[in-house]
Length: 305
Ligand code: G3I
Image (tube, rainbow, N blue to C red; front, top):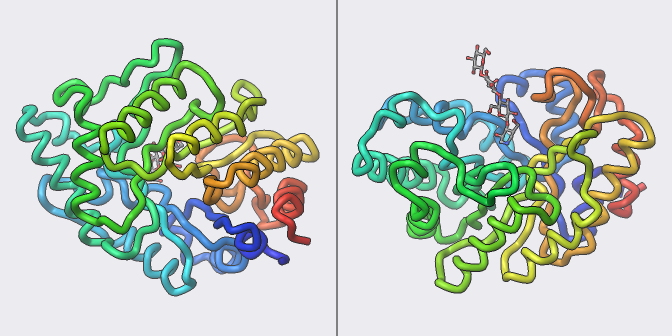
């Protein structure tokens, strides 16, 4: 195999990237996407502010562009994200608890119905836990008004809407074993014990020198998998360059391949040119779409050449 997607497929995995609809007119961007990747995640286009900017009026144009492109190339699509405290339009935070519950369930239902049958996995709830050692939930309109039960409710609504989509919880700084990942672990364990529908956990994996690839990354993925859920690397990027960055990327791939239920990896962008990180070079292709050492180390780790 000579591409990331085909090499990953040889290992029974997908290899995806975040995609922005605004770049789909750029030939080099699309060529790299279509050649190398077999899965996509819309970077911003499925978020609440993009899809329901005012209550009850839904706009799917930009997300539809990505979905139809991906479908044309038989790529898997990860839906990102249904319930998140960020990129949330102002009207949502102004609602009473009763209205917020209705609005949350309606938002989930409308998006999942629009894309029914097209999405491999949805990030149903994103980033609901605090950083630091408390293991507590993060303050958000959902948490503050609906309480802990909002996550369970979101997952139940999601399952009822599209029973064929895998339903994921997705977060960052949960990549290694720590207080935050322990809290997510306890939630998933509780969901599995009580029959709350959850199929997968996403580990964003945004790494830099302050937050390096954890030495217990594989062990952490494995303990979640052992609860009976799939695990996925959902937003991988690693600051740095050259052989250090290449080694770090290889270690991430190695960890996923070592965990049977790690079903795929997604990098958070194709090229350094468009990374969400305003400075730095965290991706596999440089700003001219040249293959970086990290690209070759990932390909090699996936068994490609
Ligand atoms: O769409 C507006 C545009 O109309 C406006 O002119 C422009 C001016 O700033 O802003 C545009 O919105 C930006 C949006 O990306 C689309 O480009 C926002 O300012 C910008 O904040 C937003 O950043 C995104 C970020 O999430 C917001 O939270 C990044 O692209 C996206 O990569 C990033 O992705 C998140 C994941 O969803 C969740 N995990 C963390 C990850 C990285 O932060």
